[in-house]
Image (cartoon, rainbow, N blue to C red; front, side, top):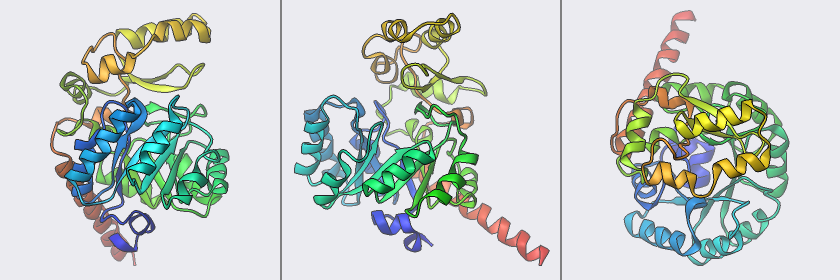
Length: 320
């Protein structure tokens, strides 16, 4: 099945499983581990200065001979320098997000780079396709980190996007197991992008305290916040509670920006301040119970997916 899959063919990977580019979690160690295991590892450039990104790319090239990518938020203040580093270092795959794909897609593709754009609604999926993106990641409301304002769930979003575009669709949001991967394929997805489950991998650069808080999370421990700024799904702590209270009291953009401050995500996810830091994670965190190697995470997801597929085939045979 693997190389017949359009995303596997496009990215030259064994399994249609992509590790999301997550700020403060997905450096070269995680990206290379996922790529070596047969998926697509992605370096998250959103938390990196250009020189830091260059170092991670170079180390990733030494750690794997398999394809890997870089995620770039297009609203990044140093985007020109980031693009230059990616081109200079010979990166072959870019996942872009948080911005207009028309600005950079043609420039990247002119350099022979495969471009996949992350979207959360049909309007931007069509814009990505029009800009020349090779595929889109359709990210539902369940996802961690920055999220769509429409709050459309993965269950609703994937079939809508699949019907709207004629390029491959990668499902994201609430996917952290073989069962959820199978559900995404049933909805029409060509592959899945997984963030939270890889955030707790041994190779993730997330702080150990953050990983432990994730695997201790239960239902309802995450909430979408800061819709007046850029919507983001946060794990509950003192900072998230303060944001929630401010929003309930009608805080405006300026007040929320002041409350957010600077380097809040780094403080929590990378430096380990579990109360004052910004902790970005998805709803699937309630199902994550163990820190383990990225290779094991990927292989368990794939085996569970195949087992689920066999169950459905057996059920179909029984009904015929």
